[in-house]
Length: 281
Image (cartoon, rainbow, N blue to C red):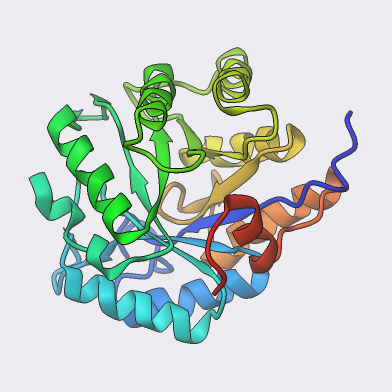
């Protein structure tokens, strides 16, 4: 195993998402206040990126900029220095409403650059919408996190980077384990890493996310391979088959335990910002 002692691991916590409910797990934070409290616990546990969705009064996903503004303000107050990453995902709205929060100028925002299948529908990311979201991120100084559900998404991100639609080196996250999309496959995972390094440079940071019981699998693969890790109740509401996760912080703790196992330091928020080329808090 290679020496990872000089490669701090950034932990991203996806706190809520669009799908999990209190019925799935009472710990899922739905209101803005709940999300701020849950993120604060995760921040203290070692997470340095908060991947954020918001819900309406009925608990359904929305892209309401006002709710995102309240969440962003609360996180900046209670989790000083933490990287705030807002979601432009397609479950929260359609068309340009998906980017209505970008004028808030968060540190980062998710950007899916291509379409793929989801469990019961097509996750549509048409080229004109992708270009518009990317242009809004450029306009407001928001760093995109490329959510790669397929190899083609990494190649498309490289094309957008080369022609200037994406500024600076993209931060690519491999998403594996979504039903009907890319399954959890170690050879594919390793090829994703190879592709990112080939296209963007040997030292380019990357991240990985696994869905459901595969969350801990991808956490292990990412930490041991020198990448960064995403966890949180958006992707997985359980510790194991029989046990619900008591909090986002508990899922973050699983990643910090892996960092200890592989002798990697957990990145501080200052280190995370430096690794990703973000402005100081």
